[in-house]
Image (cartoon, rainbow, N blue to C red):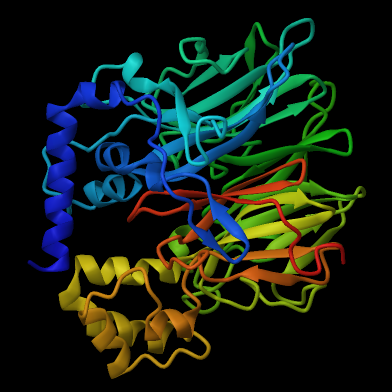
Length: 499
C-alpha cells in the first residue's frame, strides 16, 4: 500500500470513527499518561494531538491558544490550550481532493494542563460536543484565549471561536461545565484576535472565515456585560478584510488588518471613541507581499509585528516566488523599523535569512528576551510527496529552479529519500533545508541567537504556533497536521540566556 493510499485510508478511518463513535471521545475526559520526549533542552508535555484516540477522531492539528489562568481566590492556576481541528482536511476538502459529500468539520475544544495527575495529562474543560450536534459541527476550533477581569467582576478566561457563528465563551473557574457563551456574531467567521485595553476587552471578527470572504474587518468591545461594535468598515477600506492581531501599547490599542492587495496595515485607537483611529503602518510595513501580520507583541519600549506571506507563496509580483516573512517594530512615536527583512537593523534578511520561513507566527518575552517562532513551509514537502508521489520530480525541480533555496542540492539523492517514504527522521533534504519550525531570541531586537531550526527534531512540527511564558517556564505549541500538535516546556537556562 502506498503512503498516499495509507493516508486516504487513515482519513476514511477517522471519518468512520467520527460517525460511529461520537460518545467515545465524550467519555475521554483525561488524556492518558505517557512517557515524556525531550529534545534540545525542551520536554514534550502532551501526547501528540492529546492522545491517539483523540487525535484519530478530532485531528488536533494546531494549538491555537495558550494561556495561563488562575481564578479569583484560587491558590492554583493552570495552562490552558485551545485547538484548531482538521486543518489539512478542511483545506483539501475546499480543493476537492477528499472525495467526501460534506466537509469533515471536527469539533474544537479547550483543555488544561494537569501535571498533578501526570506529566502529559490535559483535562478537557470545554468540548463543543456538549453544545452542538455532529457530525457537521459548527465550531471547528477556538482561535484565541485571553484573561479579562471586568470592572467589579471576577477574573475570567475567554475563548474566541472559529465557527458558522463565531462566539465568545468564558469561565470564572475554568472547570468543566462552567463555560458560558456571552456573545455570538450570527454568521460564519472567526475571532482570531483579542486584547485588553483600558479595562475593556476588544476582539476582532474575520467575516467569512480565516482569510475572509471579502467583507471589511470589524472590531468589537466587551465590558463583561455588554458587547458593541467599534469598527465595521475595515477602517474605511473594504480591502482591509480581517483583524489578525491586536495589542495595547503606549495608551492605545494597536490593530493589525490583513490586506491582500496592498499589504497589511496597523491602526491605533484610544478605544474611547473620542478621536478617530490613526494608521501607523501601511503597505505591509514596506513590502506589499506581507499581506498580514500574524502576531504582535510589546517588548520593552516597542511593539513588534511579525508578518505572513499568504500560503507561503509570494503572489504580489514583487520579488522571488519564495520569500521569508519580515519582523517590524514601532517605537512610542510610531517610527517604523525593519527588524528582520530588507535593510534591517539586525542585518538579517527576511525569514531570518531563510526564505522558507514564510510566517513569523508567535512571540513572547521570556527571561528578559524576545522569543520569535516561525512557520517553515518546506515542512510540507514530505507531506506533499506522501499525498502526490507521482509529482516528486516536478516538485523538486520547481523548488530548485524557482524557489532558489540557498544550499539546497535537490538531486537524485533527495528523490531517493522521498520515494523511500522516510518520515520523522533526518533526510538529505531536511538537513539541507533545516526543515521544521524555528525559534530565535534577542535581548534588544538587534542581535539575534538561534534556539532551534528543526521543529525540535521533528520536520513535521512545521511551526511554533503559540508560546507562553509563566514564571521560569517557557511553553511552545508546535503545529503538526500529520501527527497532532505538540506542547513543549523549557524550565532550564538556555545558552547565553542572560545576554
